[in-house]
Length: 503
Image: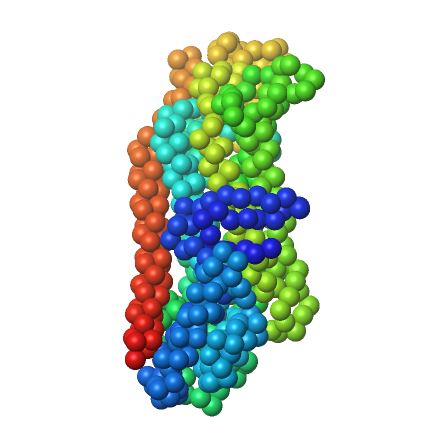
């Protein structure tokens, strides 16, 4: 399979099927494959070495012409695009004779391959960051839309407390924001050139490693020559796999939470019907299967599966071995992460919330019962555990008798309270009137009256949405800045290379 890390429409082989999809940045970085980067490395070598006395300037134009022919031939529809030094060099020799190998001074396939692997992973991380930013923007937009939509939240698979759906979504957005941070941190470690380290201990040629890194768009060099191709080039794909795993787990967690609603006869959250969002059963006319959710979960699982590859391949091998270094395999890990995020984005845009049904579910159960214990402790000094016991007894009696929170008799609450505190020094009569008892069980009031930082109350929702949007804006600026830096560096290299060609 020929795999271009940032082609406009990219093939990804999964389980024998070929899946094609585009990414937001594809048009900017078409065909930056191994062949492309070997060409850029050779360009930079010709420019730098001819200017710094390591290559006879008189020979540089002919060598540059030979390289240009190889690159032009490789750009043809059926042109050869070899991805290894040992297969690229014969084309150079054929085009320009043995003198072209003078550019091999102080180089090895080890440092050249380590450099293009880092460059391709670097491009892939920017693609991943772009899709993550887009999906996170959709998530924050939806959170703002539903800042005041009150829904049940669940713990241990059971309805636990009322919450703003927007607040719940911002919680998921916070998880994806940490993934964005991980991408930026990993990028800084991967954005280092190995060129000039040769096999593992450098060379007697006084190569200008920093200038090479600048021309190839790297922020710096891998400092230790042994680390360059023996250690860091092995742990880079493992680190990226860890990021993809985290993204996939966040995706799967969200999808599974939504999926539980489909077990209900009257869910409060569904997918908009149509397209491939849902599909009918071949046998049961009433069913609307959540196809998009199933696909998103499957994409997340595939991403986790592929991400395990570099970890297993790096396990129990000596430093520098090629096992975890495959460009195609590691690019497939990144692409799987992008695909999972892309599908999650579609899920978010297809969600349809029924606020009335959500509130009905809240009022049909006792998800607001903790508020009784909190109120009794906060306003009346009753220890929380005693108030918790009272609220628990209310819930037990209600469930035994089939009474919901909206209909629970205040007199029964008074009786249960008195029985609960009997034999203690606490007030023997329930210290809240009926109106307060009813208001305490109101899910909407509970959300409105939350007082702690990071809660779902309107003021905190406004603050957190604002900060989330600021993070997304800064994240996009970071992506754009990294891309502009790489593009500008490669443009500078092309300008310098053309000067050599013209001499």
